[in-house]
Image (cartoon, rainbow, N blue to C red; front, side, top):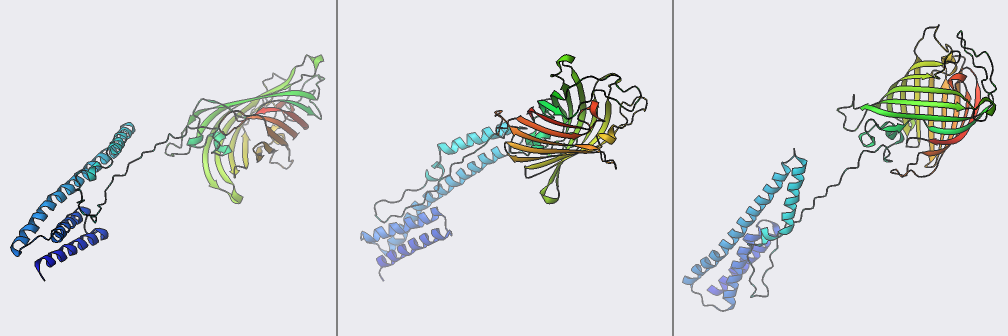
Length: 445
């Protein structure tokens, strides 16, 4: 075989090796390019019929290799330096963990530099392929993908956010449903309603000496009832400081309920009774699974005082320590329980010694959200004694209007209640009554 044939076969062999190595990953693109260029030059010399001597073949190959090697080296060094700068810049931004503002600004500047020069690091020093042959190989271009940093502002804490459950919003049990301290929130419904009853206590009395009205007043069985109730959170995070998502809380609440004899013109339309109920409430969030899909959400403790603010013989009052708990199911049903102990009083100053046996010692309230506009509720009180005194209250609430809060959570309700038992008011604690009320209520505002 003559010299030219050997040279041509050698060039084709080197080109084939370079391509296969590059495809398999055994050789990087710059080394493959250098070998391909060397093979291509050898083929060109053969095609043009260059007269090669055995003595001139070796120097020619050395010359071609010398031309290819510096270009490959320069390209390799450029990529290495670019990659080093790229990693160094990115790592410097990542290291700024203590200063969130500086870290974000660093990433913004780095991303801007990547957008301005997306291809210069790998393509600026890459050798250009020969174009004097139609079969010249096309080299792959290593492009730097643009970096997009997306940062969204977290949702503000909102106790009206419908993403959280009813009890979570009501008692602000989680960080996301927290509205902070010393804000004014609704507690029991703020209501204005007409009530009609089967009887009215015209001459209230109590077993305690000096607590019986001496003359009867001609009150009517129809009245107007006004209910006011507010609360504020005075502290939070008392026992949940190490809990990132749970929030315990300490509240002060005040409720007032007045029965107004607006239809008794001959008596100058007096307020028959007004009950005042301040209390201090501590709530601790819980997450415990219960049977039938229920989940225990909170437990709590309350110090409660209730009185009608009247002098003798109409004075009625008691002080209680309450244990509280609440649970819910599928955001459709929720229940709240209270179990209380009446603080003992001196028999001579006790306005109503038998109040626990009549109104009760425990209360259980349950609500069912039939749909977003309708809610049904029931409240049971029991004396936990054999005489089984207490009361039952049924209620229906119909949503009215749109408050404009997140999730269209209007607080205005058409409110209908039916009560039967003891304790519709403190002055009637020892009188069994059946009362129907209809009106408007503002709940959880």
